[in-house]
Length: 90
Image (tube, rainbow, N blue to C red; front, top):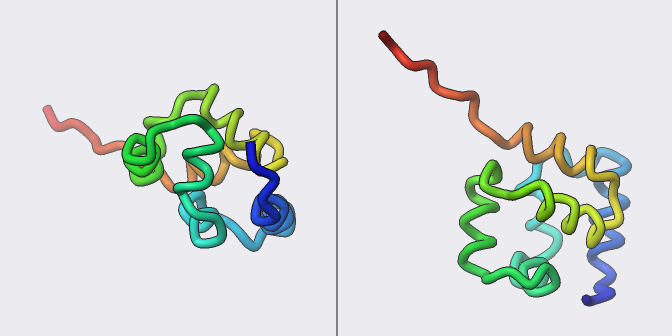
């Protein structure tokens, strides 16, 4: 795993509220670095960033460890990025 200084930047920005959505994280740190450090294929990771409800709990915990943030803080940003569920008509 890498000790990239951008991970510390993510931690600070999440804690001070500068990052309010999940996708904003990847404006600071490249998806390639995070996917590599998580041991995940880049295309799979990119698909999950685009559609964050595909991330497993274990993957969210792994990212929160990389970023040095509370998993709840990361989870809140992921859920804020999700579109509301479409209502099914009868």
